[in-house]
Image (cartoon, rainbow, N blue to C red; front, side, top):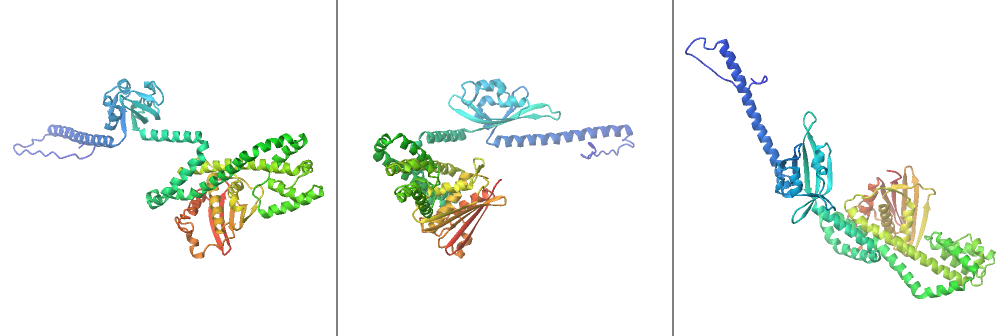
Length: 531
């Protein structure tokens, strides 16, 4: 027996003499059997310990991570094969920390001096720290190996530190990827002037590989992104091209005439012109043709009351400049005999400023779309939510679509006053508005009425986008948010746009719904004001 447990049975028999097993002899036999039980138990425990140590050693040798164990004096008590390969043969057991540091020095990345011994993760762990470091590297004769190390102390039952254990791995691939990413970011910053060309080339490459990516289930996410951003890059590129043409025309044909014009102005006329230009830049640029006609008629009546000659022509020019009312401050200019010439030059300058702003807006937008491509492949957000205005985002998209809208589409805005900002990923929501507005314009074939309603409903902001197109057939309505479903002809759509929209809305804990009848289709998006 050992600690109350039966270990075995000793059987003794003596038929030669009587009373062979006296009390004293039985007591001795009991003592011997107890010692035998203890020995048997210890032998079993030792065998189990050896088996456990053998399994643990096999596990540690099998993992593709370097592992070292240091005793309180810093000597290496254990190192697995991966650790020896990364640190060198000096990393064998019983090597001191000084030997390890001198034979296979560990450096801080970017430094020419070895890391101080007391700052090594294994030594810091012996002082009670849990250490994680990814800025260390081993420098040998032929190569440099960057390492990520995790060290922590090991305590006994009395809470004394008896060992430190360190796990480390080669992060050469990660460092190389980080280096390539940093170089790529620097290249983008330096080559701002070539951004338009780079974006065009990137779009061509994405479109060229789109079909192959969509056919690969493994790359389905990237395929969705390629299809989803194609028209979003084309739009700012078109805006940039149009604005650059305007700027080139101005500098090639009008710049010298503009210099002569300024020299010919009287001080009073020059002052009036300086007052006119800022006023023209503060007005909305997204009004419809019907609104323009209404403004022109109202402004012409005001000009006639002020006895301004050629009031209809002057009203046309002022509305084109974005000036619809409050003309008292510029009346002296409008009554100037040379007013037509001055207004013409003012319009040219305002157009120049508008083209510059369009380039800035479109370039920034295109850059953000490309930057977001990597993020969408994970359906994850790299940045943080910001407080943003829903209506400002919608107006940005309407500005980019101005050329497609102005010739045949009437835009009706029903925006609630004093809308609260929404905590959101504003760039992603702008992609939602881009897709819905783009689809609405295509559904109307760029002829009809686009109505946008924005208002607060409880703790959410609701956005409705309504077009006057032919509508969506009832039998396909349940499928319009499915990936790869499209009603467009081959080559005009992948069926991924609304699927991406749905994912973005759901990421914001929002909802999206659609209703459609012949002649009217409405998409309603609801976004919570705060997360």
